[in-house]
Image (tube, rainbow, N blue to C red; front, side, top):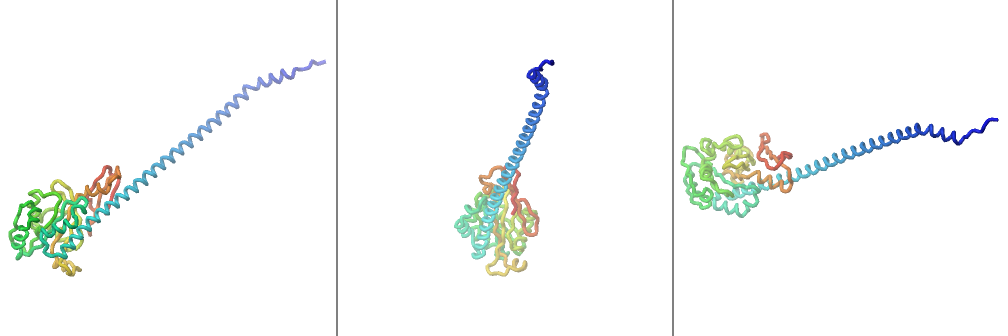
Length: 309
């Protein structure tokens, strides 16, 4: 009669024999699951980092664009204010023909020229004088205390040299006194290309050619000049006889009385526009009629922004 088998012992033995293989498979499965979870975690972290960087870049870009728009708008506003002031002075000179230096100085002060012109360096009036009136014009002008103050009491008379007309400084207002050399230069004949001021290079041409171009065109002209170690830009316009027809070049030449010109420290104007916006630099370009855009000034701490007008 066969002996009964100890099933309990066999079952335990079978389980013990199968245990190492079963445990190793489960461990591998858990390791695989852990690796998948780690990979997914890294992927999610990487995606999050990329999204965060993209968000930061988008925010920085938006912030920069907002700042650049604000600064550009401020520059345009300040330039428009300066241009409007020159236009106001041109209107005064048109309505008040023969305005002497003292009268102009009173107008300039009443209009708060020094306060309203951001970065303003000064304003000059140049009058076209017929040869027959040259002596009388200079006598009246040089006796005016406001004119004498303008040129630092350094009078430079102009002698007749056969020209039919002369273009001479008649009035002005400045925030920085002129040096003796500049005061002497400004009292020359602006329309004579052989004189120091008439031949002075401005906007890529002589001052005499520039004056004629402004008078013929009848529009404002902007150009950059470096003088007394300072880079400045000028807004200049011609003024004509009140009520005269100005439809053609011939009519404008016939009605021409003179020119008014204001100079500005463009860097001061741009820095005023930048204000609290840090890390920005502005380069200002301007296009005169029929000419390509020209750089007339720059300021700021980084070459990251451009402004055009």
